[in-house]
Length: 306
Ligand SMILES: [Zn+2]
Image (cartoon, rainbow, N blue to C red):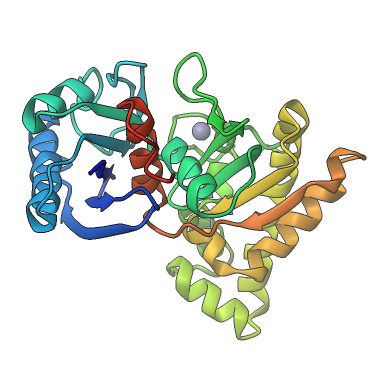
């Protein structure tokens, strides 16, 4: 039995599941993240979720894979973190969970993990740029099936590219006028509120746009076009051939994906303009599945995806 437990530690929830060699996930458990209670509390909660999975499944996992917000060094220590998880910076996540769970733990950034999940189960090719457009905009560069980690564990951070026009909007990272501040879910909601004076959630704006509301449709289209334009500059540096778009904003469907694709291709010359833009397919558990894949390889056991 070479079962691995994949764990996704997010700002609002911790999810874990048993992942078998064929990539099937089962015995999924999810709990709220004690995000404001400090790193030890988060590690305790993650270990409890993982233990609940193995108990339900009745197996002893050979390894654990973790995808988490933040950037990690090779040893699984947090080297960069935002405010979403209190006290996360400097935490030895691999060591702390390894001690609690009694098996090897491999830790990777959650967007990097989701990109691995897309490759393992979502049908993504060996080489692609993964872009997660949700509460923020994260990314990952996959080359020859491997995620590029980068010097600070943050390679692929395509959300923190500055847009050309000056609109004086502050990004979650503290920068000014980064594309994340405009094309993420909160960015789209803010733009809609600026135009209409109404504070609506992304889904509601999407519903209005789908129903023919001109302002809602325009706000979504412009955000998508800005993202396409912004991604074009990153794309020429890495020549990925395929861009996989995931995250909640991608769930708007053609309203978002079509203008993004058109603008991205239109901003490029051949051969870059031939780039394929496709929606993510591995679902909400992509990070958990990708982390499990990584843990299988790390442990020396057969990859959980055979
Ligand atoms: Zn930023």
